[in-house]
Image 1 (tube, rainbow over the protein chains, first blue to last red):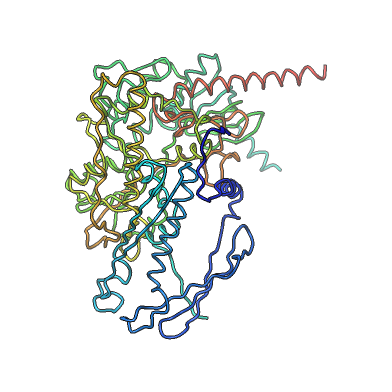
Image 2: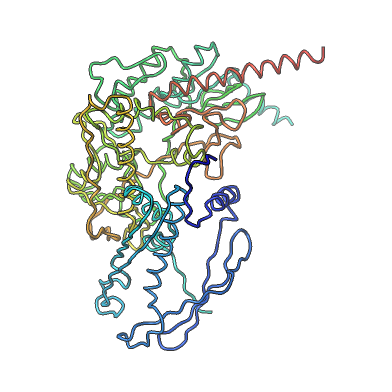
Length: 186
Length: 444
């Protein structure tokens, strides 16, 4: 490697990611993952989700420790606001996914990031979930994500980072495209 | 016993004898004919097997208004080039077929028309090629049967309501065959944009579903974009010399055709132009459910990616021109407006309520290898090859996107590939002959 080249360090191990990519190209079965969460109702609209195991590389996997995400609703919904609203957790999921993607793409393109900040806002007409107007959907009518990024790069390079991150983002895909959902009772 | 013997005798009586040949070239389009020319120059005995007539796809499988995406001056094949009165024009469909037919005549290519290949199998120290008109035993085979044999139609086509007509660029001829009412064009490649434009102008309200696409102006700084691509050497980039190796190659081979149209007006065709005519731009078609088409919410990013990529291409061309000292002689570089999208692009349309009566799948093409009885396809059905040298001894392929160079699927791209591959093929035949001589030599 050319020692004069200054290498960016965004804390992303791109070599490992590229190695995994190469390995999974050869072994498509190992690339099939299953993500899981379990959830238990607490009280009112308050629920606790636990995220612990997942499946991938052909076998069961485990997080270093179980992670918990609680959800509730604000007081103006006559709830106790113990935690964020589930739709807000969805926004956090989108932001987390896009931001991780920006860091990985920047590392791969040797762009040093100094700060990456996003604000997200999603519109929702409550006439949908309250069943007031059948023509109004339950979910968001749109999501705006605004990034402020400080990096050793031109504006075009930063825009390309953000575009590439969307192109390769799982949560962006989950939100922008239909996904088949099966809900059953045992 | 008797019945079998009789059957064999009867079969032998009607079946013509198997003919032996060094090389069977399958397909008499520009690729197969270019290869034929190069084989002839090397003195290699061969035959060109053609299912229909010379330039069959151009004669029978292309829509009426299609023109070449490259200017006439670029139309050249080994030992042959366009010499007509309009070097800057774009050949019409029938003129392309004539151009290729003229080439076949000029090179006296050994073409057998009306000779569809039913199967190619390994055997006899080479390949057994079965055709409608008898079998050939060839030591080597060149697949030049085209990259665009079958439309690639997504599975969700099956979810469309029965009353919605479905067309592909192979079945579409002109707007008169399209039912009154709206058309959903799926795909924003060269085909998708051209057909969306033609249908919108013919009075069909068009909705165009747009995933990732390649935006490219017909002309830039007073020159055709293909002049830039060729002069700057982009079209000569080789399959084995890309910066990120196999990754870049896989992407380059899969990328949609750039949004170009060959027209008398040299019009710049893009989504902004289409929207200006009244077409509705929506995201990639993601699903069809209960008579509704659902579109991805990724339209803005698909457009942003294409706009950014266009900007990088033009910047690279400017840099090349400056480096060559050409900058002063050319008009200043223009920049194109970002692709406009609606403030809130539709993510769902009721096909019946919107009176969308036809869906046109401009979702790409696949080669047809259903007759190839050889273990040379990968798990996605693509041919395993290194720059046209297929993963089976003595088997070659021509004319696929970025086969050996970025220009490989263009008419003018056939020449370099045919030279390289015919030389490789000649070496293969020599080595084979050498081995046979050794076989004979050793026992004595």
